[in-house]
Amino acid sequence: MNYNKEKNNIFKAILSLKTGKEAKAFFNDFCTKKELKAMNKRYKIALFLDNGLTYRKIAKKLNISPTTVWQVVLKLNNNSIHQNPFSG
Image (cartoon, rainbow, N blue to C red; front, side, top):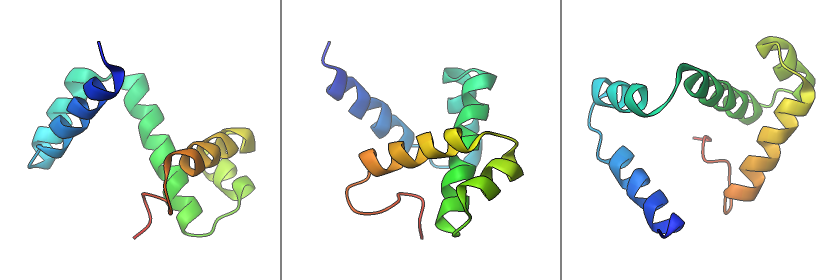
């Protein structure tokens, strides 16, 4: 099994979703509640970063450690070509 091809198929499936209701059903079918909470927290971290909040402020707002914020920063920097994918 080619991991990159399979990963791209998942991305294509997500992009084919047309409504919030479809997206909710898709993610509820394929992710555990814990995974959805983790994705939501990462998304919030990215939005706060994009709005200029410091790691410590983000950590305090989300009740997480600054190290967790830093891990998301590293992931965003490693996965984005030029910019934060969550920025406007």
